[in-house]
Length: 359
Image (cartoon, rainbow, N blue to C red; front, side, top):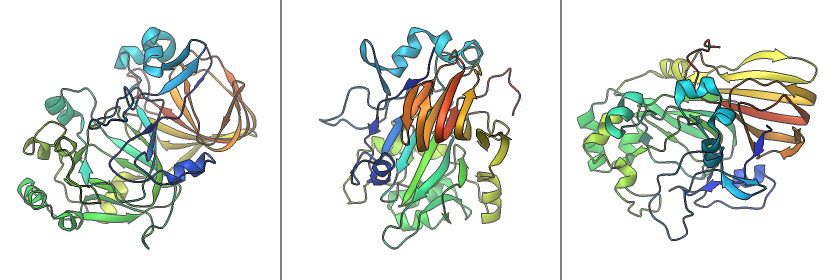
């Protein structure tokens, strides 16, 4: 079995962006309401109805000899081959991770995602939405450099946050959080329950638990247009949604020590270098590695599924032409294959198996 190249998979969101994603792929483009591309995705987007919405928006598609098919359908047709026995024993017939390109031309809503406990009790889901961001670059917008809002810097109660929400005091809610500048190469882990917002001008790869549960504190988009209530509470209602937040105060040093990760080099030879961006030591929910290839490197079978996302250069993988902006799904049963060229690849790995050590 060989890796499988994904087709482009832009997904509608409530915020503007996407220009830097077009530029990554050497395409002409502009900012619009398709600022994300979901990579090797088996997750459907939680979007309100739209006349132009495709069926099963969010699911990645692949081109096969039998026509275009969803990656999810391929996996369901032969879970052992695509996911491997160890993964299935631990996580069932689900890839277990979602990866995205994301480019923001404006600040995303102040939001939170449920942790596993909240997801189980409120959404009856085995997955919450802990996520991580690997900053690829950015741009200055409105005179501001790329930045994020992350974590409460004040002592906040549920009642206090609900009052700000009811009054839609967006500035007041933002003032409760740390504003942190970001640059290419930064890695942030955003645990479920942690309030956050990606600021304008951020271009990043996001890896996360495979859900689209987003609790938003903003009832309107940046144009002032009212959004469906569902996009705030995801069906929970305006009372229960506040149970998704962790009301924890962090100083800035505490916050950075907890959520900003330090990449570490793990292996290197004449043909490649591997840098651990997010290891299973830090979270069992996913892992992210940067692989820099220069020449010809043989990727050995690991028995685990993964997504290979090319962020720089061009070359071939298992004889398949690839270039920056493209994504391959690597089945668990994929044969050893050669990667040739000058390429920078982000390897996105699903949750740790119980039989694995935290490496």
